[in-house]
Image: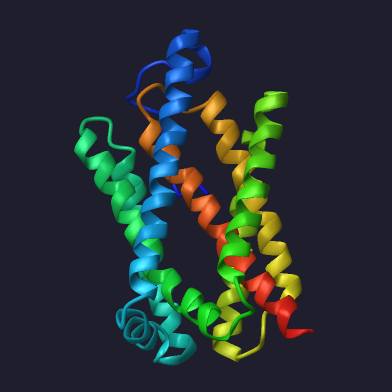
Amino acid sequence: MSYASDNPYRNWGMVAAQAETSERASFIRQTYLHLLAAVAAFAGLEAALLNSPVAERLTGTLVGHGQVGWLVVLGAFVFVSWLANKWANSATSVGMQYAGLGLYVVAEAVIFVPLLYFASQAGPPHVIANAAILTAVVFCGLTAIVFATGADFSWMRTGLMVAGLAALGVILCSALFGFNLGIVFVAAMLVLASGYILYDTSNVLHHYRIGQHVAAALALFASVALMFWYMVQLLMSLSSRD
């Protein structure tokens, strides 16, 4: 899920799609190795938080002020996401790029704590692990589609932005007026996350430039995290209906 509002590909070298085969392969390999590292760091942080008293206290802090308080938290997360993306797209500092990716991973780990804490305490057995497996399967399937077809999904950018803004509007209304978003909204967000994965993966093939593997990994990680968030909610919703 790309947060860049400006052109994130300026001030870099050749587009990966136009580079030599060896350079392109190296760029793709580095992108997915960084994505794997980000996922591993996220999982490690979540495991450490959920297996400590910090999880309960952090959950109380983040959601203890009701829906409006949670909206403030989400607003802060959006700002941190924008800042992390800006750093990750730095064309002059490799250290800044890694700082952006690290900041985003930490921010995701923190904001996920309430959801995963509730899932581990009140959800069905192994709900977190099952959601992670399903997210990985869907991500790999969508990635395989893009790599097998070589399709360029950059045309989806405007639609994804509009859909994302609409989703934020619905979430805002839910918080202000107190209605439940329901399983239909969760399913729609999973479709949106799938769209972002297709879009970000095709950007890796067609639009990111050599040297932008950290920014590309951040965009992919954001889309994976979005899917995982709603995959957990989907499994919990389905379990509550049994």
